[in-house]
Image (cartoon, rainbow over the protein chains, first blue to last red):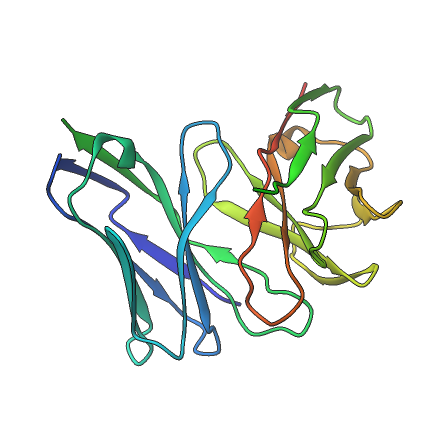
Length: 114
Length: 115
């Protein structure tokens, strides 16, 4: 089955700096890669996703890049703010006619210091 | 913005007892999921449900687990005889059915504590 590795497990940055979180996946058939932000005790919240037919997607301060050949994808947060502090999870999914099972990475705890 | 709602927010149950976790997916969504997250660990897939049947399940989803859509709005997860290791946060999610790989929206979760 799919295996998703995520690095780093913790990341501390100064407010205003950029943060980069990287994930690798094992199943070359995976074609959907969402990123979720989870604040303490709350639901995972989708912040951005990318499909395998594009290499990069941007939404304001958040961008995701995908390298299908190398089977890795990354989340980039620019101009970080204290409210960006949370655990971020990457995930991967294979195409499936009846929905798609997400395989999550281990998470990255991002701390943005004011 | 429509949300996935889950009840109860916290469930405490004695080991060996049955427990039912409830979810109301977003109303026009067609795919439903259960995930669990043991404290401090990654989110793990349990089961997906479409067109009134299970479409995919993980190794975690053994004979002790079952899902049901008893009416047009609720989606439930039943654990028949709970074990200590079932203690976790259980998340329900739903996604639309118009195309593959649609975003999954998660509920706030039910924290299940087995004593």
